[in-house]
Image (cartoon, rainbow, N blue to C red; front, top):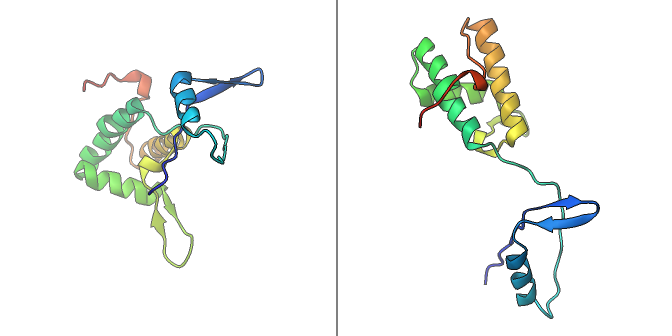
Length: 134
């Protein structure tokens, strides 16, 4: 049988763990009664947000694709190649934007905005300067 890891979101306040769904946590804990367990506590890694993703595709990628004559997917792949390429091992690889946390994604978009302004003469507005209609 495959093991499943259950992740409980919470926050530490004054040295005490406050879980978002304590009833579920205690039900799950009781289901493990008498079993050996492993407890891992780490700072939460927040993946990019839906608003970040919407801004990226509707504004950043759209403006660059339109200006350079790419479709959006081509522009996205080119941007990843330029800014998310890593050289480990014998062959280079490209990180997926879905693997970026909120801060990494923010940094990625900021590099693109700077590149667009300096190299392509494209002004990409700040996220708070646009309204995206889904």
